[in-house]
Image 1 (cartoon, rainbow, N blue to C red):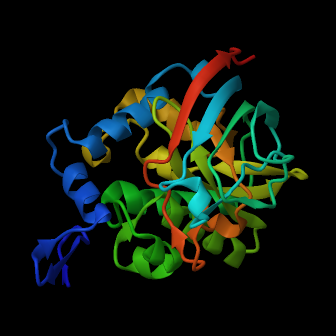
Image 2: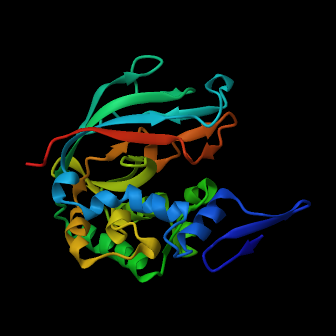
Image 3: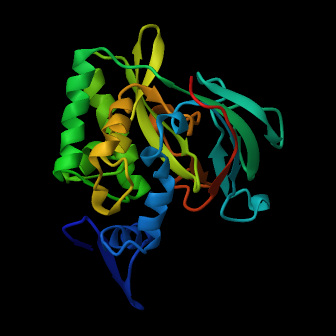
Amino acid sequence: MQLTEYGLTSMHTQEGLRFDYFDVMNVGRFSNTGVTVPELNALALLRFSRQSRSTWLGSQQWALTVRLPEDDRTGKYKVRLPDFESSGITYVGGLLPWPIDGRIELSSSYAVSVEIEGVYDPIRDPVVHDIYEDIFQHLRSGAVIYQAISEPLRTEHEQAWQLGMADCMVTSRVLADRLRAAGVQSRARRGFILGLVGSEHAWCEVYEDSRWKSLDVTLAAMPTGLSGGSRLPSHDEFSSHCLGSRFNRCLPCVAEDASALMYDDRGQPLPMIGVVSATKERRHDAA
């Protein structure tokens, strides 16, 4: 096993040199060509951050499809459902094998329509601001490199952070840990970010004013989705909204402390690679 400056691993086998999915994603992300799948995926996924405020907030209806990577009948995989009891989330309809209950796991693909109400709800606590800013600066300065990370390393989020690597799962967990250590009631959330392409995503929430408020330092640090995390000054408004906004395309699932959304039949957590798609059904502009 070899560790490069980007945290990429390679493995020699009897059949030669091989790379896993995360290695390939990182090679593409840091190629700076602008044409690799990881670069184009980031541009499509985060394009909304370069648009007007009304595209982040207000009510938006989505059709979400989650496809398991193998024939559903094998029962090899189980997935967690969206958290329909979460504030701002409304179940609209869709095909599910039995009545909605976000606390159960499905062994089959599913499609569902949801409406997400985005809202700007600024966090006032200066302690939260200070800890958030420290995490933000680590990402923006390059002290911690944002990259694709395997599910086992995500569960060792402090180790990944100390090694100088993080994705949204690692960042949300580290941020929640720091906040709890400072006496702030917080939690890491995991679900989906919806758009031209759908993807797993994780963020943090703090409890203030008798309700949970979202903070997403990952999106704040890289709001353009451009290669290497570069951004434009015009996106400072979006960045500021990440400290207190519930965006109308972030759908949480019932996953305690940002635990994995998919497991195999041995109980091993797995990343949901290429199994999520979402389409925009209707938009109401923000008030």
